[in-house]
Length: 366
Image 1 (cartoon, rainbow, N blue to C red):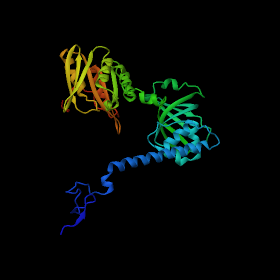
Image 2: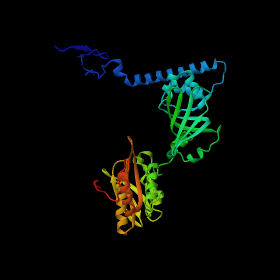
Image 3: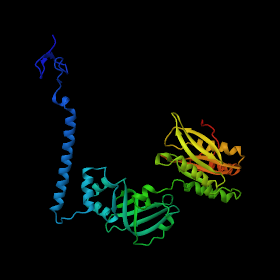
Image 4: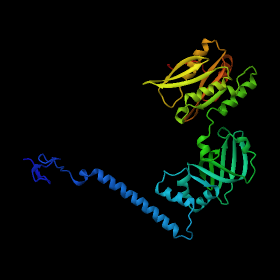
C-alpha cells in the first residue's frame, strides 16, 4: 500500500514522495528546498554584517587606543586580516620587516617567507659577488639583517647599482628567504611593484648564450654574428600579453634592416592560427598551431621560405634552450649558414641545454 500525506495547501491526499499536489499544484518540499534563493541572499547578507562588525570593532579598538589617528599600515593590517589573499602586493620598509621578525619570528615567516615583497631601505653596504650578481645590504637597526641579491639579467641599471652611495634609499622587489637571523631577498629588481610588473627584459639575449658567443668569436675571428643579431625570450611569451607583432618587430631589428617584415594581422581557425605578414613586399599567410601561449618556431621556418625565394645570404635560425625546470628560452639568430654551423659545433660541446640553431623544420610537422 502506498504511503500518503496531506497537501498543506488544499488538504488533498497525495503520495508521500510527490513534490507537487496534483490537485492545486502547491510545492510540497520543505522550507529550505522551497526558498533556496532567499536562503542564499540571507547567508550573503549575514556574512556582510559579520565583516562590517569586525571592521567597526577594529576601528573602535584603534579609536580607544593612545592615539585616535591610525596609520595606513593599520588599515592594511585590518583589511589583510579580513580578506587575506585579496589585498595589495606586500610593501614594507627594511626597518619594519626586521621589527616584525623581532616581535614574532614564526608569524613573520608565515607572512613573508617564499613571498615576493616590495622593500624600501637605506643601503648599508654593496658587494659585487661575481660578474652577474651584486649583494646590497639594507639597514635594519636589529639583530635581523637583510641582504638583497640583484642579477645582471633582470636589472637595466645593474652597472649603476654597483656605484650607489652608502645611505642611499632604494626600493626593490624580491622573494624572501631566511636562515637564522639572516634575511635574504632573492631575484631582486631595482624598483617598486609597478616597475616589477612592467619590466621588459623579454628580447634581451640570455647572458649564458652571450658569454658563449663572445668565447666563440675570440677563438674564431671569422664569425660575424653579433649579440645584436640574436633575440632571446620566454618560450611561453604569448601568455604574458606579447603578440606575434612584437616578435616580428624584434626579428626586423636583429636583421639590421636587411629584412623588412610587416605585421598585418591574425585570424584564428578551429585548429590553427594564421599570421598575416608582408615579407620584403610579399604578402604571406603563416599557418601556426592553435596553442595560445607557446611561441611556434614554425614562424621562423616559414619566413625563411620567403627569404629563400630571393636567394638571401642570411636567414633566421631558431634554437630552444632548457633554462630551468619550468622555464624555456626561445633563441632566434639572423646570420649566414657558415656562421651558424661554427656556433652549433661549439654548442654541441658546451654544457648549455640548448638545441642547435636550425633554419627549417626537421622533425616537427608544419
